[in-house]
Length: 141
Image (cartoon, rainbow, N blue to C red):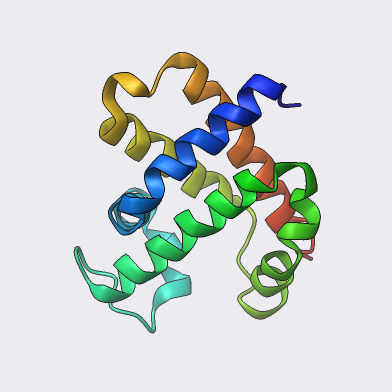
């Protein structure tokens, strides 16, 4: 699915984004909540307003998980097994939401990375997010 060059590019991108993980993650989440309001259902117990600590904290966790997945892309299923179980059995997040969030991450990265978000980077990140989401969704019933 991903070429060696794409895998290397994905790792580089996520490593560069780690210092601004809260910003990237919270912006992508906020985009999703505004664009797809039904996704807020899973966050009723949190303050998810712009700039809120809950939003920033959760956004950072997501970006850190994506960076970990990128570093371990060859063993993504094993690396994400705990998150897959957690999202399927405890949180019961419908897999469609992962696809919606992927789109919001891509838009956020395009805005934040500017010229560094090349067509090659876009394609590689899109493939990676699809693989990441597929692993998260595989336990959902």
